[in-house]
Image (cartoon, rainbow, N blue to C red; front, side):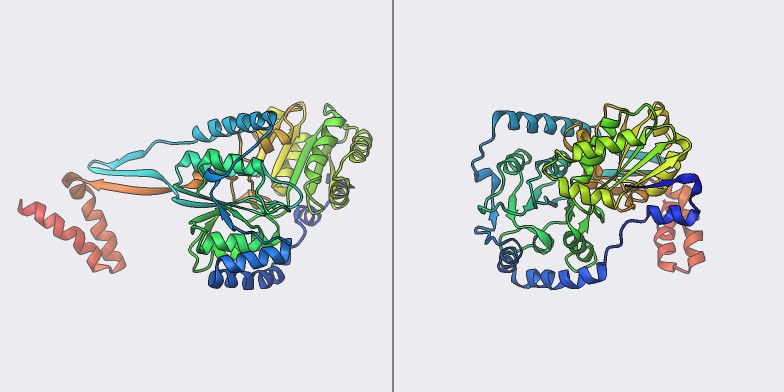
Length: 430
């Protein structure tokens, strides 16, 4: 990992470090658009053809009903999934907020109610391994919110099946369908709906650049679908001081780096931290990883920043806006209060980022690529829409009506003014 000293960097150099590797969206969009068009026109047939082309598998049947599938899990695997589900359920259930009701002035009552988004699509990447964790992170809040139709799309295994771990969770959340396809074609199938795939109103889930491009295109199309957030490759920023255990720091860096060659890991350390010990641990642990090459490639494009203080470290972190932020310092609790931009924060030496990835209860579907400046991670509210209501009494009309008449008059909207004036005149006659 390249090393930089914060105090020797100019403002422009700091901004450059905080920039993620550029994604050529123009090129990707041009490759994805024909796929979306074909799925809109040909439905299931197009999805099956593209899945065979890209994954070498003909998904037949394309869609399965998880309620009808047999699932066999090892007892320890089922126990682990159930425990994680329980924690995720607890945390997201507590995010429910009651109906908001405010009397803004005498006789004028305004309220806001939460309703579930009725139909949601959950994209679960496949690639080199199944991701039951992402299925839980998206499926549990959808269940808690009360979404009526839950559709899951995930690339099939080489034997044309859906992993039992994903099917088990699909059953638990009451998913209506599991689509055996990944990539842009699966996103399009959920967005437009096909002969066998229910159309959804919002699509969730991480993916490669083609999945991300498909989501971004479709949210601005006639498909009438929204998305959770734009996203890039996974990333972590670790703030560490001299009290941090080098083994822990190395393990946390590598746990993110092993996601893929395009992952980015950033280490921000105080001057008195033992960087040599951390580097030694990284190399020692790296050699033992089955996904060693992915992690090695990621580390080669990552970097370390040496700072004077943990306050300076937090200044850089807020500028970088990481997906995951680990604070492993003696003042971790205090430092965490100064976090402005991050997807999710892991506080103290015992809080491995892996805990949040799988089972602590918080959601691991988070904004990457610097989007933590303006996006939140997935939560219960991601699966809800909020409807405002108002009720005005006769007294409220008398109190507020003249104000509305004046404002409508200023804007030259006579019909708006008249809707109030007519009512006020009726009250006067009574």
